[in-house]
Length: 141
Picture 1 (cartoon, helix red, strand yellow):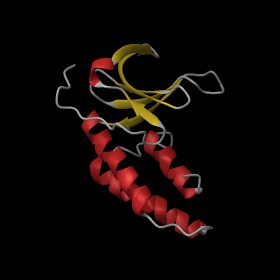
Picture 2 (cartoon, rainbow, N blue to C red):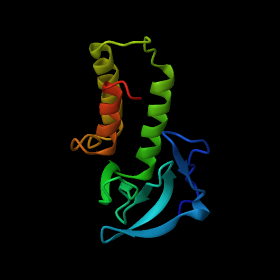
Picture 3 (tube, rainbow, N blue to C red):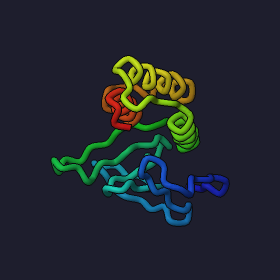
């Protein structure tokens, strides 16, 4: 795949390290080939399927069961979502011990913004952004 105009973040976002385009490589995961564009701090990967959809490939789970989570329809939408996440988490003021209601509102506000970019971002409770929103709601991030 050619990504000559693709600009990936050069800093960690959500503990994800993005590779330079020249360093992308193909990995077979659950019987399908993915172009690996990034890895996280625990050894999981971000991969693009042949149809350009982006997935979080969990290879470093404690259960030793490989799993994948849907992220986005394509890399461009994923970059928009990541930038939104960074901006939202930087700009949103959260008191020191937020109430459950405040945490829910925080997560709900984020969800609405992500859905504007990717309507299928929360396609199921195990999608990448569903898990992120759940962590927001519980005050974990």
